Image (cartoon, rainbow, N blue to C red):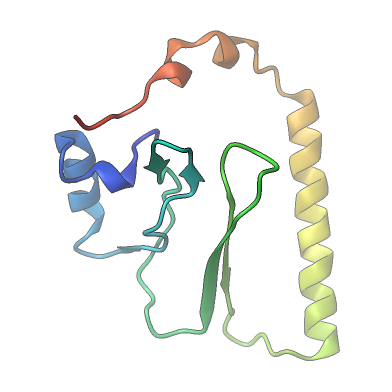
Length: 125
């Protein structure tokens, strides 16, 4: 979804979109994840319905890309903090990163890059 969640008050479609989730889920991020000298936007749509677990979320402010990095870490039931548990988490993380890199390499993005949808932005006046 290319909806700026910060614009829910002045963009009816964004407001309708958030209204669908707001009865069951809560948006994890509420601060801008892309900031320019004249604007700030939030297009990361990460929701949770678990407010009582040990979860950590954050925005990594960096100038490496147009958007800041974000993370959401949720402690799984039954997962302790033993060395074996951490090794298992790291193993799965590395496997998923390698799988993601592979799919990036073999995916043809030509049609997506030519699409006008990438140029759409929601602005409030």
